[in-house]
Each structure stands twice: as C-alpha cells, then as structure tokens.
Length: 109
Ligand SMILES: [Zn+2]
View (cartoon, rainbow, N blue to C red):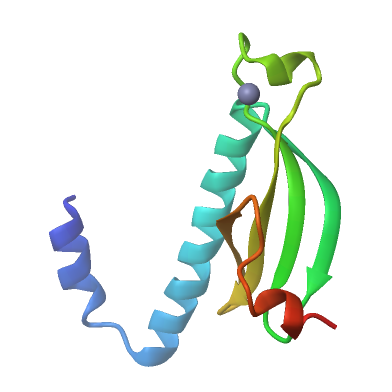
C-alpha cells in the first residue's frame, strides 16, 4: 500500500475515528523515535534549567554516540542550550545554541 492509497482510504473516516488515528500515529512515532534514540547511545547531562511561560530551556552537555569521538571518553559536547515545549501532547525540542537569545533571560522566572 502506498501512502497515497492510505490517505485516500483515511478520507472516509469520521472526525472521531480520525482523532483516534491521530493519537495512534503519535504513539507509533514516539515508539519509533525512542527506538532510534536507543540505538545511538546519546546521552545528555542537564547543567542548568530555566522555565518561561511556554518553554523550558535546558543547558545540556551531549554525548553524540560516535565511538571515536572525544565525548565517548567523557569529554562531552557543549554545553548547549535546548528549548523544550509541549505541542498537542508531544514534547518538542529545538537546538538553541551556546547562548540563550536575548529576551529569554528576561522572561525567566
Ligand atoms: Zn561526540
């Protein structure tokens, strides 16, 4: 079955069924993503955490998972800032950089 065919057959569903499908898809995606994370032995160490009204900013040191990288011996990458927020029940994250953008610090509680 192609994605196009699946999309076509999904159109006959009512909104209730579509919502169920949506939730199920998110579960499926989460499961796939967490499997991916397990394969590459990445790990993060939270150095600092700041919460704003809608996002959480974390300063993290990262192990990329590559065997020959210096981080494998404990010299982690970073620290870098990452933003985390929730969107339709899912946690999203975004790389921010070495410094927090101006405005974020002032918005911190
Ligand atoms: Zn590395």
